Length: 120
Image (cartoon, rainbow, N blue to C red; front, top):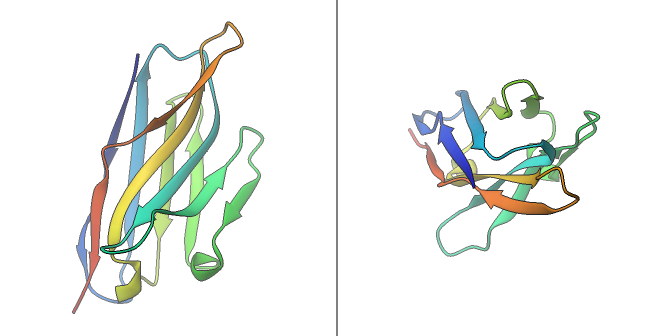
């Protein structure tokens, strides 16, 4: 089994910054894509950013230039640096990992979610 622990959410003023972390532990052979999704009240969960093993990244259009995703493979951890935050960034943020078991099988795991609130 794999456990994900998220941290770093909170309340911030518009224009401020936050850094989210998601650390995975347990039965991990390797981790493929790592990403962050968010879900605002009344809206569907949406992909914010992801990063593959080789380092290639993807960003949703509305966070490009403001957010940066990174990973530390030695620590099985993914980060999301969020700068120039806007009220519309307010949501619960979930990390998302594809974990391989070493026998050719993989599973998707989700973090527990961390609240990010951008408000003056």
